[in-house]
Image (cartoon, rainbow, N blue to C red; front, side, top):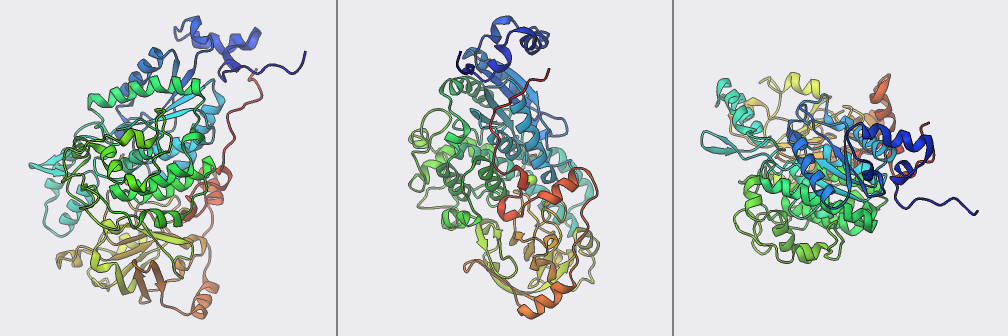
Length: 574
Ligand code: FES
Ligand code: MG
């Protein structure tokens, strides 16, 4: 008889079966009211949904999923929506980043375990994008990303206010005595005015832009507001397209090539994107088997200009960005720096997608010859304080601090920082360098967004708006300042960051890419001998995470999750 024939379509390993197994696989789904012909071998499309009321940024996703389904049915596919762990940036303690890899495991195993031929990923709030991309990449089916889109522009007392950025600025005003607590509370309802993700160029909008630049979404994915009907049209068209992609066997690995990542890194510079993208793209590359390093970020992006005049670094918000032409207009401006031959999910190359992209507002999206900020991409620093690297986003920093020597004011952990920062007796001035330890992947654990430490009130009252800050933490994509992040190895892993004392001199030289602690190797060795590692958590996810998480310069994925396991499952459940 020869070897048994393998069914053409993955889902037919479930639905195409006879006997008891086939009955199991079909019968319970028929309980949803589904007719028999849906099981005939047409592409089954999983719609991976991160809807949750605890992730308000993704609260439009029930509706979004319905529009995807329309497209899937129209194109002759069979959509099945499923939930995965949803990480709401604003509610989850101690930090949503602690669970990015956990959610990615949920996504990976949910896709692999089920009768799915192609996947649509519904992503919005910060971590929901990398966790879904990473999980799906480890299965490597045909996959389309659909972002939920930003919320409407915040507006307070007739002025635009941006998600995150506005909170940070207004909370400093409260601490400086310039804004009353009641006014601050009033602003809460004025900032988030609709469903959708943060409408600054924070991490959510950055990652939605990365999705588009990687070619894993249809064009315009990055910027259409969540409540704009065109967002639902995009979902509808993505539903149609994923069915064709299954027919074409256009898998994720054919899109997420080295060229796609290089395009994304360059795009991040042009949009003034979040430092969080560094960690997420390194982790994603690890899942799909693309060699990508921290140094690629500096080499490919740091000399590129930022063209987009958006908060936190600029004036406008995501709605303005969409009306100005959105990401395609930016990509067209930086086209000479892109690999235009990179394939995208719509079947066309990136170059074909952006060739005619119009720009409607040159104040929002600047041209390449008159950019918003020069040399704006993420810079990678090294030195004895960060042998494996640290990052800074120069476009969000103060130019006068990019080369700076100063006295360290050290906080051992976030509790130490919070306990002392508001005390006017703290010995600190604007020439000092604030150092925060034990906020990295293992140390926090989960590498929280606490790297943009608020300034001491006594400096705020003097009108100081920025001082150099260094940590092994991340910072919100909506934040700004001369903030060195992702110091690797982190303090909790015994990096030299753990050995800094009050009064040590630190040298930051961004043009020279240097981060140096002015101590002899002998003194460092002496202090290291006295250093003790903190105990690991005793049980559960935190234990697994701390025992397996990689350092920031590798993307902070678990070592056991790097790579993929494909889509084959050998055994039945009964
Ligand atoms: Fe959810 Fe910013 S908090 S997108
Ligand atoms: Mg964030």
